[in-house]
Every structure is written in C-alpha cells, then in structure tokens.
Amino acid sequence: MTADLRLVVFDVDGTLVDSQGDIVSAMTSAFVALGLAVPERAAILGVVGLSLDVLMPMLAPDASGATHAQLVQAYKDSYMDARKQQGAAVSSPLYPGARACLEALNSDPNILLGVATGKSKRGLDKLIEGHGFERMFVTQQVADFHPSKPYPSMLIQAMADAGVEAHSAVMIGDTSFDMDMAKSAGIRSIGVAWGYHTRDRLAQATRFADSFGNIPDILTELWSTQP
Image (cartoon, rainbow, N blue to C red; front, side, top):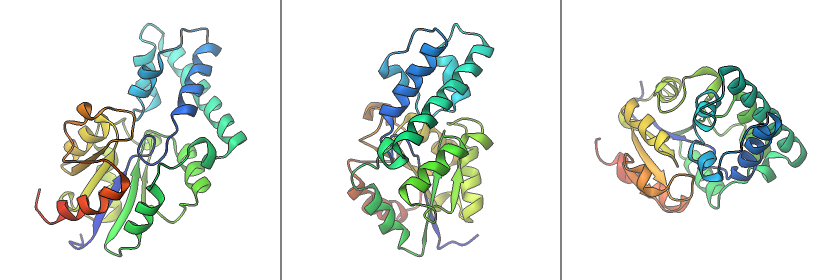
C-alpha cells in the first residue's frame, strides 16, 4: 500500500445530493400501489442510507417477506421513472458547494475519492452520469454487492480498491449508519449538517462539518494527526 495516498469516501443521498423529494415520492407510490399505509416522511428519511431490503421491514414491520420484496421493486420502478422524466441533475441536485469541494479534492494528486451508498449500481451510474462525475470516483461501493450499512464491507473494499490503509481514509456522511460503518471499518469520519439525520444522531463522528467549505480544512486537520 502507498502511505502518501489519502482516500475520502462520500455517502450520496443526503450528503452529496438532496434526493429526499424523489425518495419520499417513490416510497409513497410503492406503499400506495400495494395498498399499505404510507409511512411518515420523517420515518422514510430516517432510514435513508440503508439497503432497501433492510429498510422495508422497518417501514412495514407487519408485512410479509414477499410484500417487502414487492415494495422494493415498486420503489425502484417509481424512483427510476421519476429520474427518467426529470434527469438526475434535477431530481437529485447537488448540495451547495458539493461540486466545488469534490473538484478541489480531486485536483490533489494524493487524494482519491470514492462513494459508499445504499443505492443500486444502476441508480448510482445514472446519478454519476447526470452530474458528469464519470471520472471523479476511483471506487464506487453500492448495495448490490455488500451487506447494508453499517456493516463495514463497503469501506473495506473501498480501501482495497484505492490501496490505502485505515488511518489514511475518511468517511463523510449524513447518517448514523455512515458514522457507525466508519467506526466498524476502523476509519475516521465527518458528519455533515445538511443531511437526513440530526446532529445528535451523529455522535460517532470524528468531526462535524457545517458546510462543504469546511471539509478540506477538516481533512487536513485529521490527516495531521494519527487516529
């Protein structure tokens, strides 16, 4: 492994892009299609980041496994239909400062960027294409190939892909699932203020960012000290 390289892994929904409108709409459509009571908006946003097969039983605890599977498919279909109609840049806009932060980090030859998301590969591919990020991320970890967050599999694979050790990697996310995943993987984390979990739920974060403009300085601070 190369000691000089650093890896910054971003969560997607609630961290890089604000997709809550599409998420709530697609979830509502899925539950209505199956004749089930629609969960509260706060409940839906509270589980964003988990894989669909994990979060559906949380939102519909009395439903059968077969119904959960139907909900997952109905959600995916509704979400992709909305994205097809609007385009990823409209349906899942970047948060203010996200692009500038990514481009600044990406311009440093010693920093590699990655993503770790509960999205499917198909969903992430469409999002990356929509925002023109095809060459931005050297490692892309999705729900298709890993257990759900907070299991550390995504981050372990991301570090292997990038060729860095845990002390040179940082996870940036908006949920407790991201922070717990980072802790389980033995890496440090930055919780963000603009996502779907409140600050009190991000207690496991190593540092906290109020804006994308804070992130480069926080990373410099973290990497100036050993974990």
